[in-house]
Length: 336
Image (cartoon, rainbow, N blue to C red; front, side, top):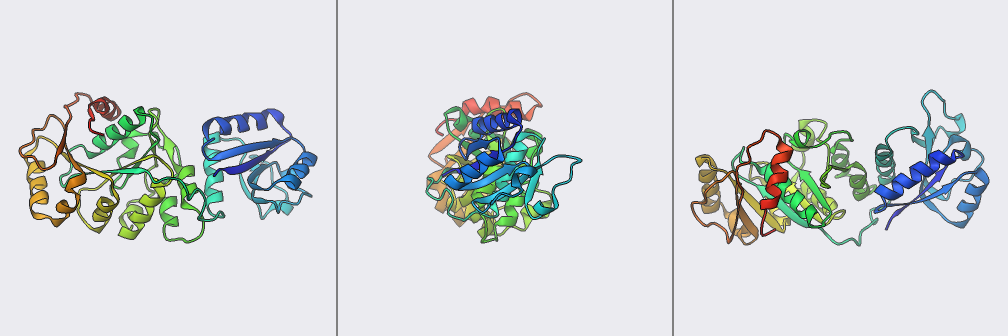
């Protein structure tokens, strides 16, 4: 199911450029129609309904917009919108098209029903965790995500750490994931559409979210919130890779329950081996996940005992560029 978007503008070059870009980069979620005159717009609205429309202000005057679920005005800087259109939503006419699409999807998410795209198959969910910090969880998670994308999968990386590492790895030009968190407890709107609008994509093809507005936005999420977030993210991609904090609380247990595969990361330091040994020998959670767990020995770590049937060994990469590290390690990910 796709959102039917109408672009109504008397500027043919602008409308063509906008529609071509949306069709090229967002065809998975949007179908675009264009009209260049108010008369043509009336004809199109008589023939069909639209989920959303991007309208020049003059096109909204004297036209019945009831067959458009979400009419949005194209606003130009320094030019006031007509008083008669004051109740309509608007977006900046001249901005990055990816940002405009994000605005449209965010607005439409708030007015659309929850059944949108409900028939899509759930993604394969991989969780990356360790009881010790500093072992390279984020690097492993991104290496795995990059590996899956190289195999032709649509991949979404979800960072659930309380302090996000996203700015160190990705371009942060985009809206915060905090907007998604705000919708988790809201029965209205469609969180999947919002996720599609807010996710970004790096040059390697992995999709991600910009970091939360503040620490508490992530910290206050309940286990039920985390479950709803994962379910929504798993509904808009083929592979969902979750980067987790080092604690083993109710939220972590919920992620473990929903994951199809769990990567347990260690490095050469004794502390990571000791903590993982305590987790596997003393914690009842491990018994419930060991059949879907894989040990990832990062930075040339040795495995002192076989805790799972699968083990992946990753070398130490000598570079200070975090992006280069995970992209290099992606070729070493096996058994994925």
